[in-house]
Image (cartoon, rainbow over all chains, first blue to last red; front, side, top):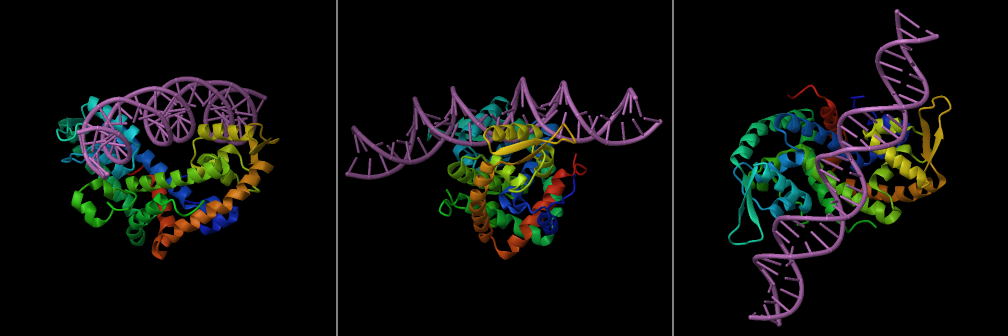
Length: 162
Length: 162
DNA sequence: CGATTTTTGTTGACCTGTCAACTATCCTGA
DNA sequence: TCAGGATAGTTGACAGGTCAACAAAAATCG
């Protein structure tokens, strides 16, 4: 069952199931599987959850970001992020330095250990990325990122449909 | 912050954050928001969860499917699906008729009430679908479904990366 | 100033998805 | 025919995401 069937125009028409033509459904199904694959790699090779990895990547190897800053960019839930960062701080992956100019927030950066893990995993994840992009045609490769941007925009608009 | 920025080549290069170039991350972020939008519509207009809606759509208005059948197509977790179907059966949305030829399984179909709700929501969701596709260029529209198929294939292959 | 609003981050309650174990039934093949 | 294995579906435990309320600090603006 690891084939990509059930998605050709023929088979869709055959079972006449409209859901296979729904973009959100198709996007989610692919996204789930990609996330599961990434989660497995990160867990096995670095003991990280996917969210932890993304937080590390959002902070970046040299970077310094605040929690809200990260949540805004990634569209993460603040509560989820707060707990994730707390856990990573306790695990020694992240350093939090209070902002002297704004006592509400802290500057988050990778600890030495965190950067070590990040530097080790980044090439692995980039190889996976290359592999994924290689599975696409040139046209698809060119279209996918802008398409996702436009869809994200459309998803954030609320002024279309009751 | 509801704009779609931070995704142009310029701004990505500017903050030099490699995660913005990661397909899985970008796909997930878009998928999250699309799901949230769909969930809101379904909850407000039909009192359905997104998973419930998808189960209805996977069964189809005339259709008759078994639980494993649905799980296979949608790549749903069997446990999750079992609970969802149980709830929908108790809510009167789904009818389950035991298969006389195989006592392990039942044939699932929409009840009258379920089909009524489905028939009412299908046009709404199709309008949303049209709206989403309209936000894409012709090239993007042509590329997105096949690209998702290939990525799903790639995600299901395990023979690539240690 | 000072009252109001906004923003940052934390927390608790809740719901859902995930993983694995389990029973019951069916199929396969010597 | 019957032992081994595959399949259908259920269940429990648990990590994870979601939502809303909240305190503290900062910004706004009369």
